[in-house]
Amino acid sequence: MKRLQVLIIGGGIGGLTCAIALRRDGHAVDLIERDPKWSVYGVGIIQQGNVVRAMVQLGVIDDYLGAGFGFDHVEVFIPTGRSVARIPTPALVEGYPANVGIGRPALHKVLGDRTIAAGTKVRLGVIAERLAEDGNGVSVSFSDGTNAGYDLVVGADGLYSTTRDQILPNSEKPEFTGQAVWRYNFPRLPEVRELCAYEGPTGVGLVPLSEQLMYMYVTTPEPGNPWYQRAGLAAAMRSRLESVPAPVIRKLAEQIVDDDAVVYRPLEWLFLKGDWHKGRVVLIGDAVHTTTPHLGQGAGMAIEDSIVLAEELTAAGTLDEALHAFRERRFERCRYIVQSSLAICLGQIGKGPVVESAKATREMFIRVAAPI
Ligand SMILES: Cc1cc2nc3c(=O)[nH]c(=O)nc-3n(C[C@H](O)[C@H](O)[C@H](O)COP(=O)(O)OP(=O)(O)OC[C@H]3O[C@@H](n4cnc5c(N)ncnc54)[C@H](O)[C@@H]3O)c2cc1C
Image (tube, rainbow, N blue to C red; front, side, top):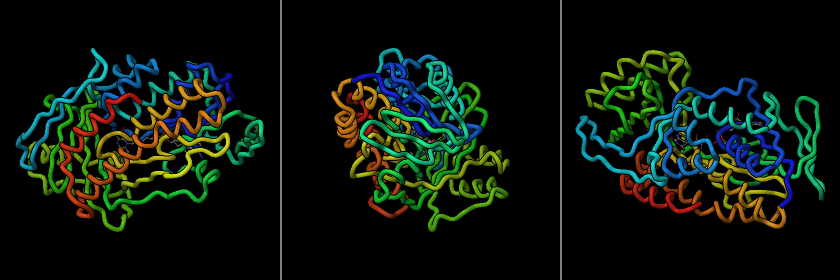
């Protein structure tokens, strides 16, 4: 297909990787991000071999690995702190690690720098107020009073996507699961060189992010989706850890003292069973499939979306064919990640059958190893 004039709405992981993939293929790309500071909360993210493979395809692998911490095993502990398994995880690209822990700010810097260097025009503090489509393109009115025309608009504006509200107002809505995650950064302990997962009624994980940094996540049932004010968040997170006797966790819990450094997030999910685009506007990433983090694949799915969308735009004869082919290639893989992650989540909080998480994780590694 000819080179397109593309607008990407949203400068998160999905929007940035989409900008990198589309610029690589020669499209002209504008990106708008609502947040004038383009800020990202300071904890980290776990990514697996399929993301490493995607980063190779996007040409950012060296910067990405330089900013993160690669590892090839996951160690599983029972709540007392006894190690019960050390599971090898498959690398998909020879010479690169099977998994990467990376701080969200570090990941956004790698992707944001590359997006700008590759020639995407980024505007911050701007939203698209109106998308008006005629047969030839989409005319967009921006909140800063400007207007522009595009061949394609990509909605990468996350779980509460207003692009989705505009084009598919009757589609599914985000649902709260009943579970939430508490996260906190620490100086990395020398022994935390891979994901250390503590199983039990309160799930805890320690994730290396760099030589200096690691983070802890704690998943807890939070019936009714309570709202917590910032003052007291550190004490609340410490109290959630009281049921975990592992000495290393007890010691770390004592260091959770800064309310501002606690990142609390209710877990929600969304999956659009119907269309993923309307006319010349398409949705990618969390805007169309938001998973809970139990398989660590939400951002991975957004990144893969970007690569597949770019490939289909190149391969297809028309835009409509490309957008249909994009959904076709992504639907089952994303559905599987959302549903399997949700099943683990609901099992943990007694809202569904218990899922053996090691088995589910092994299956996920096999599924995401398949080509996209
Ligand atoms: C607790 C938790 C832990 C997670 N852990 C992992 C993990 O370990 N591994 C993993 O792979 N995934 C993980 N995820 C999932 C991952 O964070 C998401 O899947 C990923 O961030 C989705 O990227 P996105 O770009 O689609 O959306 P987002 O990250 O939500 O980005 C959307 C962007 O659009 C901007 N925006 C919103 N509205 C507008 C608008 N109207 N106009 C312009 N800009 C707008 C936002 O400011 C934001 O910058 C986790 C998620 C949660 C909740």
